[in-house]
Image 1 (spheres, one colour):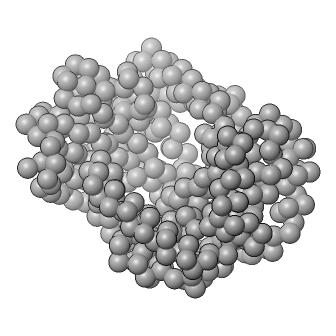
Image 2: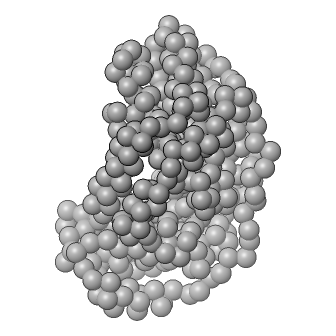
Length: 381
């Protein structure tokens, strides 16, 4: 079940409550105790879990197919009938406070939150998904219920499955269950993104190496430039070991263990980021090489052979991702929420193969303008 509600939808006095709520969904419903919820799928070797992002909450079960009816009932039950016992709220509060500490102890995680706080400023997208220790300590059952009443709207939910069963069978199982859920419609609009900041911040930290995060505004989910830019980003710093950043910084120069670039697309905006860590004595060289790769993509078009290989690689990555049920239902649910449809693999591949090198170069010049890129560096001391 994909719920179109995340940390972006929190009010000023609710920071971290979307994530807090996600934890509490598994702590008891009107017909199941916390232990029964945990055991229902786990005892068969499956998994019940959830995650919260800036704009969504995803509750999902992975299970052997004979448990499909149980899994459907369980996911709907925790999303729509959770009761939030007071004692469970207090226990989970401690769990989340520890989670906040663990993120702060990991510079590779914390640097993203710090960057977004500065990039989006006071806009809700700049808030940390986990909230702060102070905000988490304040949340009460009544606050959680208010967030649900405002943001858990049935017209902003998508139920999605992926597995060895027909759509008709799923409908027979899920429709009677979902029909029992009272309708609740959204009556608010998200605050548009505006006034993006530009900055360069160096922070001294008690860590061994240095961590660098660069970023700038990019494309929303609905922007037609998003797919061509994803292809460009895949060439630059995607998951393949043959990405230009990985070849330049790791393979050719041994400067980093991990480097990646990423596009986070929201409903009305986007953020492109580039992250790496390195020894503090090699930081300046690493940044110089990153800028060199960005400028190369701006100044020189991909050759027909380079573009062809890039397209084939991206199509292959997407096809393999769709073999994973977890990736598949996440992709499908978000697509249906945004566009009301899900592209087949062929439709998606056809769109990728139509992208040309001129488009790629224009996007590189639009996004990789060094004068528009902000940065945060955590320097070890």
